[in-house]
Length: 454
Ligand SMILES: Cc1cc2nc3c(=O)[nH]c(=O)nc-3n(C[C@H](O)[C@H](O)[C@H](O)COP(=O)(O)OP(=O)(O)OC[C@H]3O[C@@H](n4cnc5c(N)ncnc54)[C@H](O)[C@@H]3O)c2cc1C
Ligand SMILES: NC(=O)c1ccc[n+]([C@@H]2O[C@H](COP(=O)([O-])OP(=O)(O)OC[C@H]3O[C@@H](n4cnc5c(N)ncnc54)[C@H](OP(=O)(O)O)[C@@H]3O)[C@@H](O)[C@H]2O)c1
Image (cartoon, rainbow, N blue to C red; front, side, top):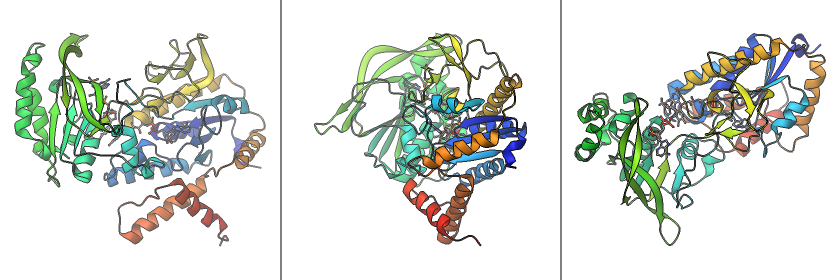
């Protein structure tokens, strides 16, 4: 008898980032049989392909946890398999196959375009694409990015600092300017992340900038000295600089358009000055109508992402729509997908992690959200009859995967690939080695599959 015959419930988890992996773990530990489907060949999501590439210890620790989760006999893993309107299966096809519930933990894969003139110019990018590039996620790993001497990076969160770090410590451009629509008191980055680039700050320029925006800060009761001190507090434990890159800030400036050369390359970022307006205990940026142009050759938006609009679920405000009156709430949150036109739940479909709240929080937050999403699924399954003939169902599902016109990567194949990458890293004396294209990864797997078993 197949192992799966011992399980009563069958759930598909879509996306093997931290949210999906921990959702799978939670479901599996409650006796559910889980089919974990992942777009990328390897699991990990942004923990593998987002977290800064030189944070080897953190990434190795997370990989170890993920390997542990995937050891569970009642979690099947399929990498290189995309769900969505343009994917290998649509969400509806997957539901129709007969999974008792589906939990979508596919992260926030869409791009938050602001609709500004010049967004299509060469040299205008979104952070996720660059982050995927330097973390070697195919196909971004193979794309070329036109990085000029002076780069404007928009937004002042930790993603901005990761991009600044790459530009300052890896690419070594001449100048990086972080552009913030609000002021120095509203930066969202942490002191720890600022340490990697603080020694490249142009301190004179920072003081001039603080002086320039101080009246607008004081107008809403903010202390410019305190905000300056926070930025400079990173200097104490700052990394030694490795380039002469000047790192500057441009506060209270909201991007309004990108200006291009005749050849369609970005040559300037036009910003509109803003003032701060108090709003619900926070502030909001109010455009003032005066505009300036920063002469830059690259613009990188680091303003968060949105979910994939082609996934097959309704989207509102960058996120999949959740049931406003959840039947299975966890911690006061709704994890149930919702059809706002039909005003009803999308039966059996749940969302968690960055698919529930786009670009929100660290790995630990995504982990907790995946676990909570799984709790919501368990509540839902509580009222359902156990699945009969799970073995037969899974056999049919595996056959469908085998009939696809592509190589879907199984758990043993992914383990072999990881071991092979580790062996390459050891051989080359590197902290990490990654094959840069899906073709290379699949060739390694296919070669190993051809080897006779011992
Ligand atoms: C640049 C950057 C740096 C970060 N650095 C840190 C850090 O240093 N420390 C920290 O704690 N947190 C960090 N974070 C945050 C952390 O990475 C996220 O909190 C976490 O990864 C979100 O988990 P998730 O599972 O919801 O989504 P993701 O990690 O995005 O995982 C989504 C998964 O879904 C899969 N998928 C996507 N679409 C489909 C589809 N259509 N079909 C099937 N599968 C699909 C993807 O292959 C991926 O495996 C960083 C985030 C970013 C963007
Ligand atoms: N090393 C790490 O630990 C690490 C690294 C990377 C990411 N992360 C985590 O991942 C999550 C996402 O990070 P993030 O940096 O993408 O998000 P974030 O912290 O929310 O920062 C986004 C920035 O973009 C700005 N922004 C948003 N919309 C804008 C618009 N329309 N025009 C101009 N500016 C706009 C925001 O300004 P407003 O404040 O004015 O909205 C903010 O400064 C966070 O939880 C972060 O901590 C952690």
